[in-house]
Length: 315
Length: 315
Image 1 (cartoon, rainbow over the protein chains, first blue to last red):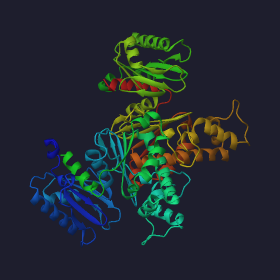
Image 2: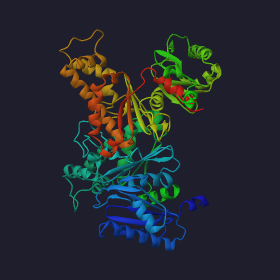
Image 3: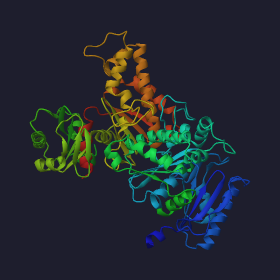
Image 4: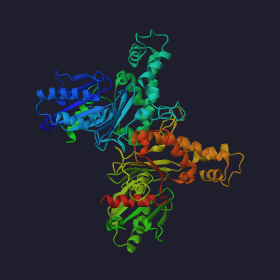
């Protein structure tokens, strides 16, 4: 490993999620050492202040082992004012409205802090250390309950005019479809969010034994791997919806890579093979020639890696 | 006018179209002086070389009046290798395959030359001197027989990984629609290109006297202005299709402005009022708050202004 790379890893990352907050040193994650992230339960603290205090304690614990940390990053599931280090709202985390998270964390840890949206952190992680290293224009997306996205444009994370860019799940593939939560009909999340894939499985896979706890994308994948034709067709349809969206985005952005992560991406070649076929059949040769469609390298670690990497690269 | 602005206008622009090539000095166009562009007929020359020769002669003619010209820009209707100044293909201009247009023009004129796609030139013209001056992230589009687009991202023209970005007309609003020329179903151009709007008018406006020469967007506009309910509904539908696409793009790019030009945009408030309503009803408040939906300032002059401005700004 080059010295410049090592130097670039002297940061701690925080993946702030609706259920857990995970905290680790960037190099521990990248080197896949035994040191697992410290984990806090998001909802088990009496107040925002208490949770921030516990996060700062965990940061201190990591600093006691890694004395050379110079920056702290934090990825959050919601809308952020990146310039001011301000959290507007967090999806599914009650009580987090208009919190000056950067200032609060800087005061408690003494480190320079950078706050960003979790989808941006994922895009940054994949571009800086993951599947899209060396690419110049990248569209990254995570497929889960929601569908988030992040854009690398001309070798820089692009956040949009009010730090709200990359909301691929809210884009439409059907102008005449069912309106989404913001009024736009036929949004992608309404077709291939986790809940929607589970509902598809539930309504189409009658002939199969419903899994304990109900249908999930994972169960549909398992039956497709075992060769069930309907389960395979379900993934072909998911690829068709997603491929239509990504082909449109390719016409607009002409990126060199799509990076796709999140739980649904675990369907692997059941999804990726027809998806790649659909995209390439829907764009010009010029666009297709420079385009790669890549599974994400990072899973749960994306938030830690991306937030820490952004923090130190921004110093 | 500031000296830096005047200095920035010492360029000649070429708007290379399928029927005419128009050539003028940037300041003549911006100052709306009497000097009209010199116009050549694209198809009345024996060869590519003859046409380039005639263009160079026209450039020389302008230089004889404006002795301080320092750069030459050229916008073309097709796919360009911007870095190499190379024209891959031109839509609707036979014989223009793989032409090293930049080198040929530089040799004949002695000026530094910049070649770009016409939609990029339009976007640049609007951002630099037109409707979107002062904006940081702009999505510009021209509505005509085809629908082209150009992107300003973080205050810079964004061209994509293979200079093919911004093809908004090829993006889909209906994953289950009729396949477009590149295979993607339900593309925007297939809904609201000039020909499609004319066909809509022809099939819906039976009760009206068909105009001489057949239906056109302009005729549909005229009847709508006169109050015909069906003609008004036609424009509401166009706004619905276009608004669905632009709302999706707003979710992805979170721009501060859409700039809309081209012939169809002449429908003015018949199109813009319902379009703006549709977009704002389909995005979050955060995205809507920073977003303006603007008619283009430049019409036929966009190619000259944008190519000349790019040329001199790139020196």
